[in-house]
Length: 467
Image 1 (tube, rainbow, N blue to C red):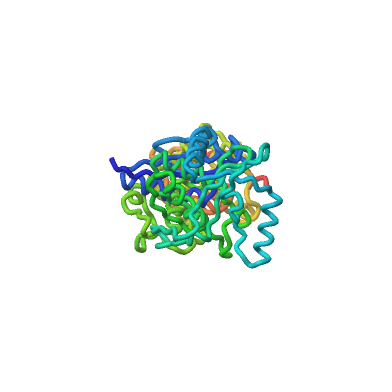
Image 2: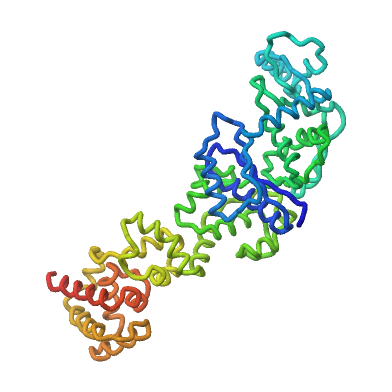
């Protein structure tokens, strides 16, 4: 077993969004490829914004995508004693100190620095302060080096270096005693043995400060890989105005998890010109070195194309199970009609999403639908009534209710009538489905069965008589 350990550490202040899901996926794939461990950690120290609903949404999204974790979920809110222990250790070793500057004083220093054209960083007023004002609230700051360079080799971005003089003494504990993000993430990754950190490139500026804390605590610095952001079509950061950004919203719109996984991994990673990968192929072929340095642009049409591919090639039994909730939303109990897997087979080629498949399946389970007015006016006319009646006679005595047997019965009836399929086919479609857009006639009849088909054809003949 490999010693490689990776993690995904979302903040439970909302749903699992597309960018977070891709980060989780990259970590999961590398852990699985290298035989390592994938850790799930919930960073819920923001008590005001963190909710159990968001935790549940994240776990549900991870499960839907098939990103199983080996350890966790761990919750930062349960680890406060650990953080405070390390704060005290740094203070005791002189690597952190108490800062008594008030918010007003810090803001004044910030404004003065900006007026003078200096970087508005903390000026170190309390860095070597001897006295401790009694009763005055304080934060604890990490004592960062004031000279030298902090650099790291990013697996995606390459060599990145920061001058230490540009970094200020970061607050690691607030006045209320709660630890800050940059400190907790270091303690967690260090104590959990994380060896590789794959995260969004909006964290690059945090990295040198975190490296300095690893070194101060005597822990090995992990390998970093900062993934570019995902952009909308207008090249702005992906947001709600570009459409759905929640992973579970795509599930509710009828997307398959394998399509989402395939799409997300290709949103920044490439393997030649290949577009479609099974999960096993992704694990085998994935590498961080093949993740591009530029931002990926979210393309809904590409995702839809992939989803259509997976629906077309999917197992009808599995798709039938996924389809049931969508049918129930439409008031349909699939147990009351034709075999759902058989129905699915007739719709796979035509359906880009499970929503489209559900809409296309409605006519199979309802025999009281209204005919499309234009289609009925054109095809359910007196001339087609005897043609439909002749088909009724053939189908009532049909024994071989397969597509081949149904086609043979149609040809025999049409030969007797001296007509071609184009003269009766559209009327049959309207009679069976309500309109002229439907799966193949023989497929539909096989799925409905002869008894239901005959009933619908008789209904159409009666409709013609009344009209």
